[in-house]
Amino acid sequence: MTETYDVVIVGSGPAGIFTALELARSGRKLRILLLEKGHDLKTRHCPSINNHSNCLACAPCSMVSGWGGAGAFSDGKLTLSAEVGGRLDQYMDLRTVEDLIEYVDRTYVEFGAPEALYGVGPQVEFLREKARTAGLALVSLPIRHMGTERSHQILSAMHDFLADRVEMRTDVQVDSILVKDRRVKGIMTHWGEKIDARFVVIAPGREGSDWLMRQARLLNLTVHNNPIDLGLRIEVPQKVMAPLTDVLYEPKLKFYSRTFHDRIRTFCVCPAGEVTMESTGGEDPVITVNGHSYADRKTENTNFALLGSATFAEPFKDPISYGRSVARLANLLAGGALVQRFGDMLKGRCSLPARVGQWIVQPTLKSATPGDLNAVLPYRFLKGIREMLVAMDKLVPGVASPHTLLYGIEVKFYSSRLHLTENLETEVANLFAIGDGAGISRGLVQASASGVVAAQEILRRSRDSATA
Image (cartoon, rainbow, N blue to C red; front, top):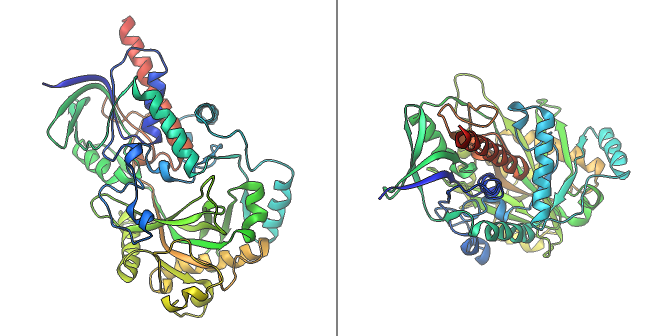
């Protein structure tokens, strides 16, 4: 027997969760189904982290899939500005985006996010001027830091709130989206179960971008390519970065390389955190590096990524495959992640496993294999990262120390963008695409906000049809 719902949401990351929250809190009597191909929040575990072993490439990867999305194990930073974290301002006016960000922030606080904000105060201007003299641009934005453990607690509170208001199913893979006469009719699961729905919201996250692009081809939807960000994760003693992180928590620095004039930027700064591995999932998974900070578990190191954007001229149209190829080379050489001392990199020599115990900065990712990143990362990216580390050393001395550790490869795949309306509806009526997987957000806040946008439009249409 075919089941029928008012709304089916595919994906339970921040975009899907906020769609469900907005619908459930409206008081409208809607039958809502939230589907997730990964595990439930309580059963998501990464065996490689627990055992300090190489990534096992689980399918699906619990680091990036499951109830809560990739954000469940992220550092939990809410960057409260329309300047970063997505493209919502390309679909609606800036004031609307700012109002959405404020609304999303209040919701996170309501469910347990801390009140404290970083990135505000008189010290910020001093740091901005000091960065400028070093050839860096410091972008200071208000940040609310939840931390990995608190993020998990907040998601758990959201899960509990939705439990008796929304039907939620995990470990369910959606195989296809059902459409008739350019209007969505429902979905079909991997097991052949047909579920009818008036509205379908697809929020598969970055890990589900391959699946979404397959659906786009099948449904003849217009797609626009996004660039990828490619680089390394840097690890230094916590005290080195403290002058920045104590004030800003996540300093956002931009630099234009002298050799190629490419833009390099910091990303996902994790004070007193740990370097981690994750699988990209999808049809062709590779292992990449990332970083986390925990609210109640500190290390002696701080880590952050330095990334450059890869954009390509015609006829090349597959930047994601390019990024995967670079990451796969690191996997081939190391069986997972590579780590190298900056001093060894500058001298063109391989870091050796036998000397790890002598390193002044000890790696927090114990399973990373010492090696030579010169043999992996394309020269253009490597040159820009080396130049930025030298510039950063003028702002926070010690960043370009020979003992600094570099891990590879870090890749951020920004999903190809679907052609969407201002309400984030696709070219198929009543089919909405939101979050990172749809290529319109790059972080928790704008992903969450996109869910609110889709839900509010669904509520408007439901209200209009009820009064017609």
